[in-house]
Length: 243
Image (cartoon, rainbow, N blue to C red; front, side, top):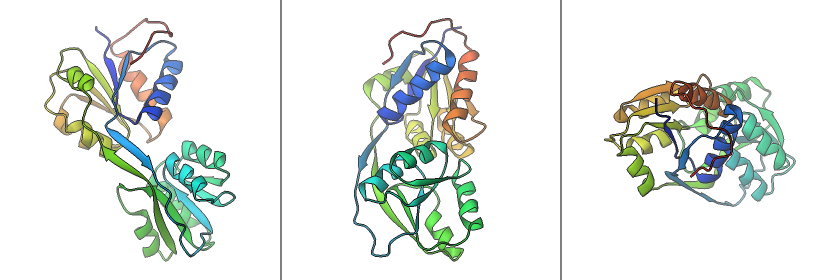
């Protein structure tokens, strides 16, 4: 069976990191096209008047925003291990959550109230963590530290989706799923790896086979993508070039 082309629609640094980790786990080269559907622009907003006792970070970019805003040394509630690692690199004191927003919310609410919280986030979000914390009686503010702008599918990605060769696309958020679904209809046989049930639902317009990761984190996405690749089979060694 012909091996699929891996289509990575994340912003390029994250896409290249995922591809490198995937190839390391696979022990071989994985043919891939990197075609970001989102552009990320970092922002440095003014610090709020009320100094936070702790930060809330739901992405690695939030941790970088904390560094730009001069919050080194503060505790930071982090959604998962990657964000916690980024927080540590930014000079923060990470408190790792359960890997997704609901678990993070539960952990914050289960902990003693230490004072004002500040959520550093992107301009686009699903759900409203701050509103839910406020509803639970916590003093919580927010600041946007990066903007996420949709980009049209590059010509190479459009050609891939309009072709006849199989395509395997890992999708890392419901918004990314919706942007990829905006490419429908497609001609290529698709296998889609979704990070969550919400992302899987957003992929419905594309049709194709959808595999949902067992957890909403990078390691589970690697496992799910490797599992999908295994259904095609390949013996290419590591060391080939990637797009």
